[in-house]
Amino acid sequence: MKRLFILTAAVVALASPAFAALKPGDKAPDFTANGYLAGKPFTFKLAKALKKGPVVLYFFPAAYTGGCNIETHMFSEASADFAKQKATLIGITAGNAERLQAYSSDTQFCAGKFPLVADPGAKIAAQYQSSLDLTRLPPGAKAPKDISGRTSYVLAPSGEVLHTYDDLNPSDHVNQTLGALKAWRAKGK
Image 1 (cartoon, rainbow, N blue to C red):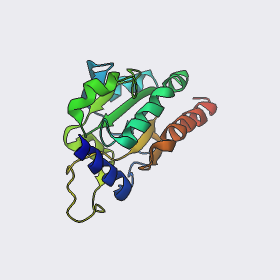
Image 2: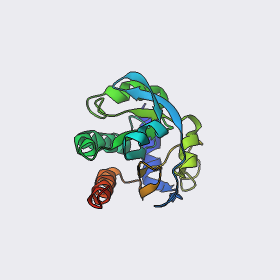
Image 3: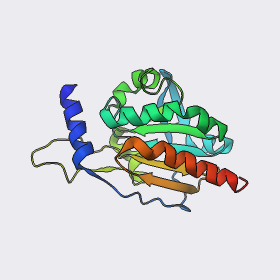
Image 4: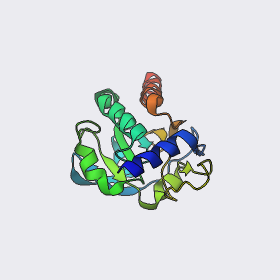
């Protein structure tokens, strides 16, 4: 556990994110993924979620790690604000996927307020160009080959990307995505 925390801290501090290739106007790739909602198994289908309204999709490197804990807690705290915008909120990670069941109901982080899905091998992250660039790790540092970056997307019900925010610092992802949703709604959507 301590070793994973140190590794994650090194990744967050030293790795640069891959620049998200999906830009506003691009079509978001469809996917289905297994995960958890409040500790219960859950299958997320993007196409089904988009039929209900906009989707806020955020990728994070790994459950139970420093920056990801902060980001997930912030999204949890703002989950009612996303609901007011009639948006589906979903977190996706390739890291520590075996711990998502506990993480999805942990009152310090997600608190069961929205689903978290696993992305084994970071395949969904690759489709969304949200894989972490590990080339800047210090010499000799070891890290998982396939790990999600920290990228957030706002998707219109049509599947069009409305907003992309790519930054390893977790502090502004909620503001960025919520702001984009409100701006889209202000246009009469």
